[in-house]
Length: 535
Image (cartoon, rainbow, N blue to C red; front, top):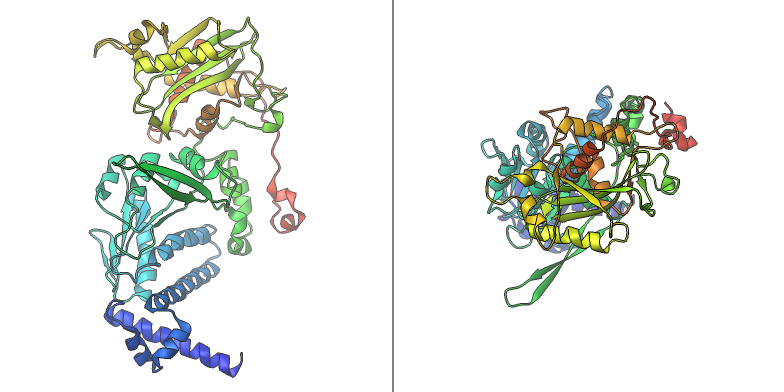
């Protein structure tokens, strides 16, 4: 470095040191550019050679703090190589902690960092004690409301949503930044409601949300549908939102989101310090291995139907896949119609064809939803009209004898005329018989039918046009309190509707079943990687 360049760096460093001291002593609002230059013993003109304004100084200081925190984290990992998950934990924690600091120089700035439960949140709060206090000695933490207050007056809150209703604790509040840790632990309703709280607390702030997530959890399905399925990784997803105004006009807003993938292979520091960690992950059961080792969003811990396979390479030969291309249904095959009523939650109708061997094919669906697990608000008669319309217009269904089986709840007459009676009347004339609601037996029928025989043929397959079935069924997880059944707070309406049809066509478990051929293993794909990471 030249002498001239060295002197420039010294002046910039002197300005930053002076600003840091003054911000801590007085706060950013009460510190002027003149105060900073006076403390640094340089002219005011010199200040503007390096910084556009006081805010630019604050951003530079935050960058310095961030670098120091990351350095401390890396040093900690080097000192504790025996903790294989420590790196990931630290980086994951620091991400939100540092992100929330970006705007603490603005007095009215408000940030919110969320975990699903408070015990999970406790770990994050403990980390802030290590990181925030050295960086901002005059910052104060209030344990009763879980809030850091910084010298400028800015606040960063830490919150949890132990129960669905807890989202209303944030009613009427606004946060410039919201960070979700483990987004898949949250329901769509919780996330969507909190987004409505992501709004400016005052002028001059940047309003945005960040989230981290691993495959699995109650929110796996909607997270995958929102961030992963719509576009390739690292591709900005643009959504144009049309908002009608009271005067009959319209406001169009542009909203964007993006999914940035990561796997254990991206964590070079971890692999350097503990390459054996790959072996630990590779030894886990199939679902956990695919999720944690490769970041596979099609397989995850807690998944109910781990047998599920959707392989486009086999759509035509119908082997080793549950999703296939549509084909013409022979006239002599029997047709079933399954139904799960919903109003505020989605309603689901599925049509199934049974071949001579008893194999079932889902050939058509009607799913009444406005969003993830949000119903179309259609009444029973309107739903019947839509069902009849499908059967009159679909060439695979038109003129066929169709047996309808539905949730037994639609026959309930305790509140007056039942849903089944409403739909059986003119002009729709839909007839239903009550389905078998035995939950565990129905789930086992799913397992029996999804199993592959030696030729790679299951007893249940789905046309690739049934997009909602393909989206929801693989995402179902077990109930934590009733570990043999699925979690009924999920988007399980298609599952229920299908279950009624399966129970009308029960099969016994096959004596001989086969696992599908293994997919390519990234550990063996690249010789350069295998040299270091082969297990």
